[in-house]
Length: 226
Image 1 (cartoon, rainbow, N blue to C red):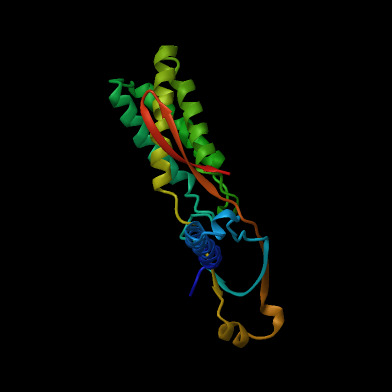
Image 2: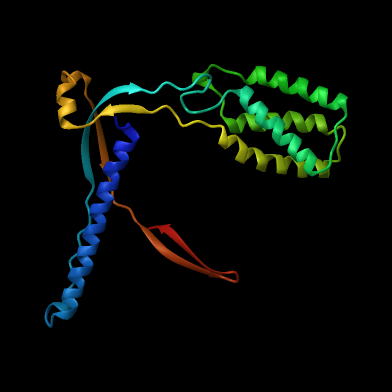
């Protein structure tokens, strides 16, 4: 059964392919004009897609249920984020050859436990990983400020931010998806019109252009929006 996002993506993809075929045909016609003694002095016709309005009927069959503790947006539980944070902090401290005393480590664990409790929400209103990460880092740096110079603390905080940005992405789950019926036969058999959802899309043409940027380090090819 197709997902709603995949289905809409395929529609947009097909329209993009149609645009590409139109451009290929325009190039072929341009070559014919160039070889013709009379046509070569005339402008080459080129199709440009106008705005398209599409009415897409679908029947929403079901919504996938998120796994235990994970929000419908794929946000993991705060307790899982805490485990990732602990590993990241230990790794960064080891990189910098910083050993915490038992007293400091115990104080830090107590504060982080309190923050986990404070930040935990029902899965429907779960707090995103970015906010939780910033909160954990903030309280940790305040605790470590008593045993660390400001310069070293700033360096440690920057490194911890970089590590967490990567590691927290790994524990995010795909958001819950909508399964839909999309074929004519399926929609006809689904029941009365009240069960059919109509999505009205307005599609406008935009384009990218290849641009080469030259610098002392060499050439860099980029796709730039028109």
